[in-house]
Length: 111
Image (cartoon, rainbow, N blue to C red; front, side, top):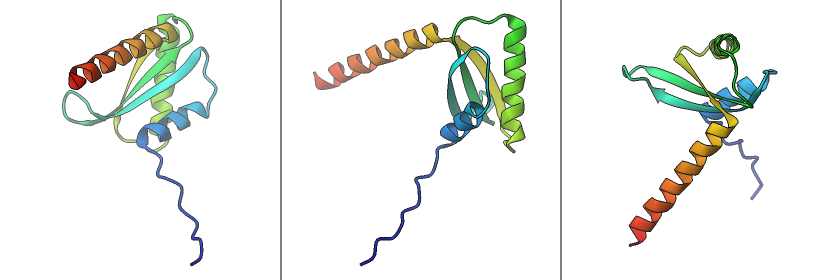
């Protein structure tokens, strides 16, 4: 039996979009969090959380939001792109809350 080369695993939509954004240089961006699904109207959408090193002025956020949308739409994407901002500290606090909630759920299921 010969070893057949295996195809690389399919990249998730979120990973593909994150990689697309990471290919460029961005001022003050610490990380990206991308989610795909439907918007409140039931239409296909992409949610991009721009995780900032620190807070930005409104004008800078406006420029970043516009550039994120242009980058994603420029890749051929047709879904609406929602862009939101959090600071790195806010994201860390949210991640901690989510970890605590998961621990509590595990405890409740174990009881």
